[in-house]
Amino acid sequence: MSVWAILVAAGRGERLGSDQPKAFVKLGELPLLAEPLRRLDDSEWVDAIVVVAPPGWEEPAILLAEELGCAKVRACVAGGETRADSVRAGLAEVPDDAAAVLVHDAARPLLTDEVIGRVLAPLADGWEGVVPGLPVSDTVKRVGSDGGVEETVARDGLWTVQTPQAFPVDALRRAVSGGADATDCAGLVEAAGGRVKVVPGDPLLLKVTTAEDLARVASLL
Ligand code: CTP
Ligand code: MG
Image (cartoon, rainbow, N blue to C red; front, side, top):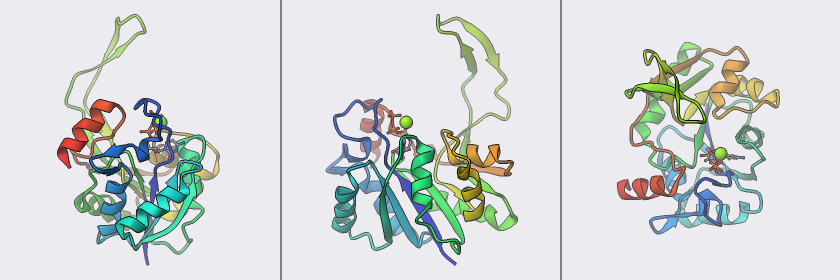
């Protein structure tokens, strides 16, 4: 029984504002995609990887995987317009007999084996999704477009969630089959009625959204 990882890297990176897709912007010496790809390939938990590349960037993604010596990459496919479309494209390459599927954002390069182990473990208890999260520590306010505070939101029970997110393959297939979009896969599973568990994430598993994030992650490599 094998664990498949889908590495979604097909976003345009509009908020980063580079002329290349975010996955191919340099993080240190190599394209950003290299770091999460290498870490998934090195993981003792992961048996096979599907890379979802920006349309037209499949070839450079394959060459990068070869250059890094990544032996677990089974497919590289073009992503879609939304993140959910990209997950659908990747999931089409995952066989039905996979024990579990992990979906990870290439935009979170600092992936560790510990967090992968934490999201996979509860699947044995029947959860239909497991996500790494961090409890919100700041006070949270809802703010209107004029900067005026509309509400202070009670912080208890609020978590921000990260990737990698783990699912039984059939639960994720059901969740993405509807054509809906969400900013994470667990949102799709929840919308389909699935029970999703949060486990401790990793404060270093930052998402590269802006140029400042890129510099911060580069300093942590
Ligand atoms: N993603 C994807 N396909 C899409 C949109 C996003 O594979 N159509 C991936 C991104 O490559 C990224 C992850 O989903 O690894 C999280 O998305 P985000 O951080 O929003 O990246 P971008 O969509 O590229 O950035 P932006 O929203 O600033 O354009
Ligand atoms: Mg986006």
